[in-house]
Length: 266
Image 1: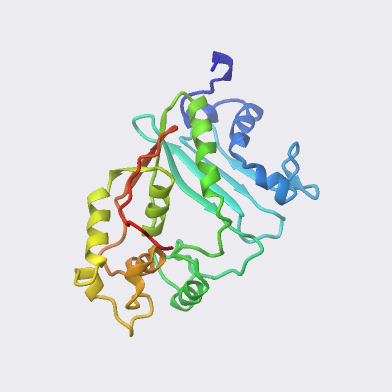
Image 2: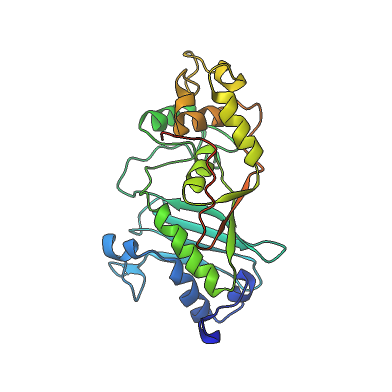
């Protein structure tokens, strides 16, 4: 890579660039399927003449956000990305959401009074969550995903390489996220032993397995067998505390080979 190909080494530095320069850098993170499958114009980033891609990357900020909607009236973005600098100048992916805009929506993000649940992390809509679970969704999902995360990983790797980094960090918001990240080559900075313990305790005779019960909607007896079943039980509080404190990393070009749920079924 030549010096002319290299970008600034931090989100903060990119955000301080002139508007057109930083947007040209961040548009590198837009996957090809947005243009080929959903009609986003490559040059104007519009759909039917209306803005489809929105960047939030103000000068002086250590964070950036990208949201993409397939039409102006869409309630939810089909792609949302939030990245930030850490205090020791590493790159942290705070949130990636890839929604199928044509799938059914489940209102797990608001309670019965219309208050935000922050995707079930600060409150819950149990009726919507049960419907989402029965439809095959995992905790925190308002719609079915497009299953494009595996294609996002090499895109992130190329992006951070041009910034002069060889790894990036990510924080799994739920158990199923952590298992998915393992599948795509991530390792743990914090939380590996807890993930191993969770797997052990979900085995028959284990502490978590004993807390499963047919009369508990989100903790059915066979939940221990699947990633999604375990994740719903953990979301429901089976650990006795929230699923927090986990941090993972992906090194460019390296699959860490971590697997805390051997022979996992989704």
